[in-house]
Length: 504
Image (cartoon, rainbow, N blue to C red; front, side):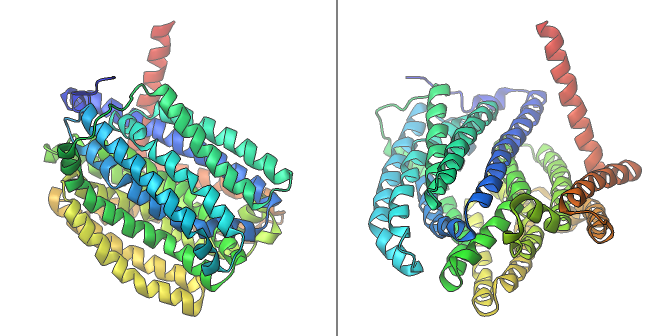
């Protein structure tokens, strides 16, 4: 229908300057996409948190692990395999599309018939109907994966940004309306379905690719030989990231799970957004440099320095303003989630670093090593789960902090060997940013004790003070990561100005 043969590999024919432009454009639009979408979701979540109870958020949290595990099977690592492959064809895309759809339908029915068992496991009768309805997102997502993969492979995030923002606005409006009307937890479930449906519909409308009526065994076997290891790795990682929801929901209460999920959503706004941006953009970009080790290392080093500068500042800042932020935005009933948020910030600041190091393994085609590392890291995480059951949620999060440091050591050791960029060199590169962020965080946290104002005014002063401190310290110390980002920003603004002048 719409041929893509040759298009998948065409990016490698562009000169490095064009690739740099694509990288900057990709990072810019991916940044806008994630923070616009998640920012809208964050604002909508704040409104819903004032309309709904922590236990209602907890009920959705109980379902999350089952949806997330099912989605790992639907993707099956094929997206990464298609992005890495240089000479994709329409047959490749169509083959994966039909596989994704079949698995999506299969897992929808698995969850549908498992809903009563899930309800009994958590001792929450409402979960039976919630699971049966919410599982429809699996079929919707299975229809969407290839459309996203094609745009990501092109490093085209502009269309994805517009679509995700539109989907967030529409679904948020529906969710808030339902919550105002007294639909309770169903407002959260319907909102998720609407968001996925609008997103999928607009991707099909704006992206011109359509599947062929073909399924190639040869294509499937070729892509699966690389992707199945990522499937297992992704499944293990998904279970690990969501097992805490299962443990809290089972051994504590829906209310405690609500506090934890709300804290996690606050923390995820900066950390997992940056993680998503890096994963979406760095992988296709670095994959195009896989045969040029010098360029690969040089660009990889710049990414780590600049991304970790942003991450450290945001996470330290959030930990410092946690109390006034939570009370101001969602109210006093959510106070118990403050300590969870502060601890989770120290866990989340490592996420982007993990993503970059793991992407390097995929770029090198070492999905086998990726899988082995995931298995080792998750085995090491088992004691953390037992700590949570025995000593409580706070102790569990502290265990997560320790585990994420061990995981970083394993990831960076192996990825660094491929491009001669060791963990020691990485730490040396990001340490100045960490010191700056800690200094800023300590000063901002101290303001909370000194300022005689209410929470809203204190929060505003802390945020402005933190931004000024970071800017002044980075300028005075001539921090390399900051200067690089400043140069990129100036270049992007100059390009926009030139394009506007040429269009007039």
